[in-house]
Amino acid sequence: MDLIKGYAYILGDDISTDDIVPSHTLTMRDSNEMVKHTLEFIDPYFSKNVDRGNIIFAGENFGTGSSREEAVHVFKLLGVKAVVARSFARIYFRNLINNGIPAISLNWDLNQVAKEDVIEISLLKGLIINKSQNSTFNFEKIPEFLMDILENGGVINQLKKILK
Amino acid sequence: MSHTIAEKILKEHSSLKEISPGQFVDCDIDMIMVHEQLGGRIHLEYNKLGIDYIWDPDKVFFILDHWVPPPTISSAQMHQDARKFAEKYKITHNYGHQLDKGICHQVLPEMGFARPGMLIVGSDSHTTTYGAFNCLSTGIGATDVSVVFATGKLWFKVPESIKINLRGHFEKGVMAKDFILSLIGDISTKGALYKSLEFHGDGAKNLSIDSRMTITNMVVEAGAKFGIFLPDDRLKEWLAKRTSKQYRNVVPDEKAEYEQELSYELSEITPTVAKPSNPGNIAKVEEIEGIEIDQAFLGSCTNGRIEDLRIAAKILEGNKIHPKVRMIVTPASKEIYLQALKEGLLEIFLRANAIVTNSTCGACIGGHLGVLGPDEVCISSTNRNFKGRMGDPTSEIYLASPATVAASAINGSIKDPRGLI
Image 1: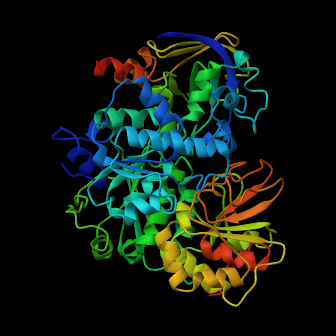
Image 2: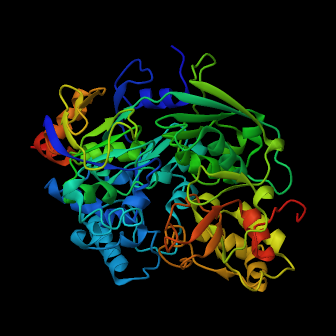
Image 3: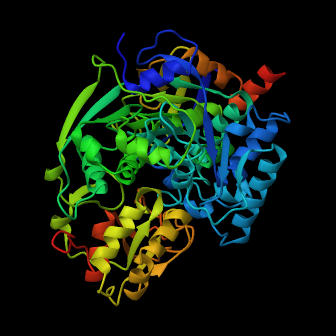
């Protein structure tokens, strides 16, 4: 897993797992039903338009709140390719990596990235290119042992290999 | 090298001779708590591994508490899936059928499973609560639970620690909830991200175990990985009633290094709320008095304990809840429910026209037994006030202490409880 290409989607500070997966959907047994509610209180069209916004750029403390991993699982099902945030809540950070979605910490601001900007990310180089605005950003590379989880497509796949 | 409590416990659970903040360490887990999530994503993820065992079924604690008893068919099915898993893997501490027991973070310590020096994880972000018992505990997601189930181990980044010195006593009508909300307001919801909060000082010793649990419960609302109290006689007494198991107290080294130090004079804390829709949106109760409420909720893993019910009952005794307000009281466990019954607290609640429910997380997560409708306002002793948390996305939640909840329930609008006690 190195090059990631997609379109930017912008979110603010303190986006909680309650925002991503509202409690009332948590007992839904059909994940395809649950994904329709992703971020519904913030943007009811998020899941419909995700192909034009599949790299999340968020503010501080992204994924705060409940440990509910559904809040990462719905992103995975919708094809979200990476999450870039100024900071992550710790459980959410782990859940992203464990599901094979890169979690990138970066001090970015609204002058640098806009909705639907064309984005390319190189995890190995620690580089984000905003093609729409002809700008680049360097980020601190993801530690090797977490990269290994990402390369395996998540911790469950990695564990499966180890247990064999 | 000198160490904080978090560094000491992580080191003791790793194979390393020396550790320092920022380092990644693999640790052996002493106990893992799972609830409804077992029937949610955990069993789905674990089944992918294709193994027929759990590393140590004696170290797993399973209880159902969020949707208890199930208010919908789908939540009942979730329970069935969770129970099936617990039986298949022969989980030793399996309370999947005992829906009467209460909320995980109350029941696990009541049963003596949280002891000094332990390293505990759980499928719930408020697992930090057990830090009141001088152990390290924190929440993890479903895939991390699967890793622990399979291997008994989990990686941690050794956190930096923040030392919080507490001095003195609260004034009458002021509670631990007011302090933890003030702290979150001071350092912000990201102020303790990835960090361990250590509570020191005579003020910490003066706090009841119930109060300490309120504080460690909500450290996660400041982003913390751990919140931990030092051991003392009060803890020793509490544990003596709950367990005969051996444990080893953990105190920090005198020269332990802290990322920062904060000090609080508890007598200077005043009734505090978190306004909608973030636990870091802090205000003093006296600044926002008069905001009308539709519901007053007393309960949850944050504030459904006996001291919480006692203070609310003291305020409500001989009074009636405002005719336009519904008050819901949800004791955090059956043990607390029975104690409240014995002390006559439940009668006080009922005579004041409150509704008393069984123990569950129901209202706090907008699941049942206290769901809010459009534009409704709730004053709540719970821990999160995110948009839609307790029901409709247009409803609003003010997080407050049990005393403020009770005072507001009588008043019909948010009210400072000082002077009523």
